[in-house]
Length: 228
Image (cartoon, rainbow, N blue to C red; front, side, top):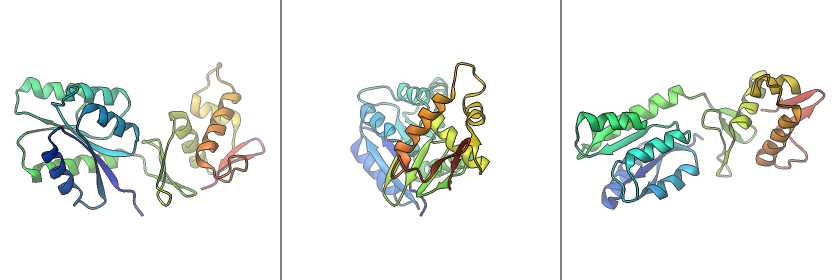
C-alpha cells in the first residue's frame, strides 16, 4: 500500500478551505489536513509527513509570507503554494524570498490550482530519495520518517539517525563503528564511538519491537548491520 499524500490547507476562510479540501481529496491517494490560522498550521507541520502546503498569505494571527519563511528555516522541504491577493511584482518577489514554491492569486480557477499543485507534487517526488523497506517500515530518507502503514505510525528521525539507517542500508553488510562514525559525522576528532552508540540506542527505542533484543538494527562483531 502506498502512503497517502497529505496536503495541509491553511486559510481562515472556512468555506473556501473546506471546498478546497473536498476537491483535493478527489485526487488519487491524497488526504487533507486543515488549519484556520498560523498556530494550528505549525502544529500540523510538527506532526510531519506532509507532501505539500497551500498557505494563505493573509492569516488572522500572522503573515503568510513570514510563516512560509519560518517553515523553510525549520527545514520544511515540501512544496509551499502561497494563495495571495492580486498584487504587484514586489508582492511576487516577497513570496519568492520567503521560500514559496509557487504563488496563486485569488480569485483562482480550481482547475488551475489543482494542476499547479499536482505539478509541484510530481516535481518534489522526483527530487526525493526513494523510500526504503526496513522490516514493517517504509523509510523516507529525505523526510527523515519511518512509516508503519499497518499500525498507522509515523516515526520522526533526527538527521543523524536517518543518516545511520541510510548508510547501513547502502552498505548491505556489517559496517564497523569507526567507519560508520566517519560516514555520518565526518572525521571529527571531537566525536567518539560513544556518540554513535548513543544514537544506535535511541534508534532502537524508536523502531524495534523489543529494543533490548534488536531484530532490525543488529550488533555484530565489529559493528552494526541493518536487516531489511
